Image 1: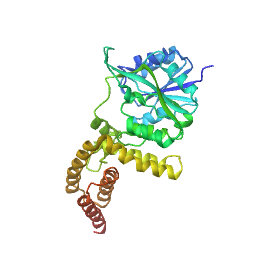
Image 2: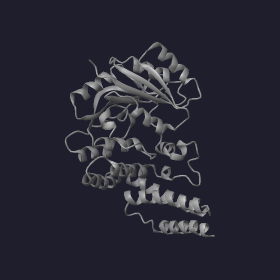
Image 3: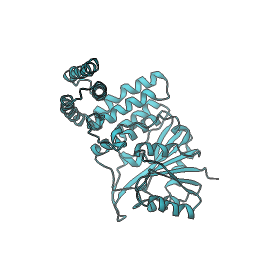
Image 4: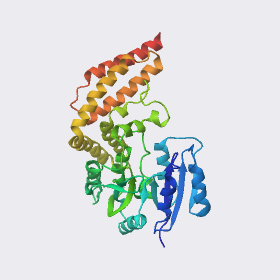
Length: 354
């Protein structure tokens, strides 16, 4: 008997594409599926379309959020929902070839130590024409007995989403730390996952990604906890990680490794590996991000609030990004920004005293 798989499709206002996405799931040659659409309080006809599918196929159900919780939290729910031994989080616009699940599950069942398997992928448009094939170098092959080596592989090679939207063993997923509001959170999630098992792929071009990826700065703005709450990402008291998307991605790995369910020595070793690996990949761009951050911090300091709570909150947000830059780019001189940060904190204390 085929093991059951929880396919959890998360969506917000997906009426234009969700029927096609559901069709591609329900047409899978692997039939033992529980398909849950986790709707994020859509304002279009998404739920009506899903209700039609649920009436026609008992494998489909609708789980509707009472309020929009933001895409990151809704994606987290797609990882956690259900009880099957295998879980597949799914977007509402990408498509699957009919044999996607069967090919991926064959690989997973043949390798009990594999935590996740994905497939090779292509980019397509609304006309269903393929516009690009993701390079072989975008496919992950983090295998072997050494979790440190597996994590290194993901940090050095993960590039595109087809390598994220695979099928996961639930016992590995449940060991992961919760998704955080950081640029590159998907990258960091996969790096942590390698501590709990292998990640590999099948060569079939069976994952179809609609329109390809978004620019990294746009993704970073979307991951801000303020954006997730429908607040301006550049609010004067907002977090600043959206200004350093590549540095923020690297630092997200440090944060996840610190919380990983692994021996302390391994966690410390992983945290030390992050900086050198990402500097080798992105150093010139990260230097530009650091320079841009300096300008933004200077402007934020000039406009800083004079109230006690707001000033200390702003100091906290600025300190967090300065710590991230210093961790990933240890030779960056941030002394001027640190002194200004102390002054901002003192301003908050003075506001309270007065």
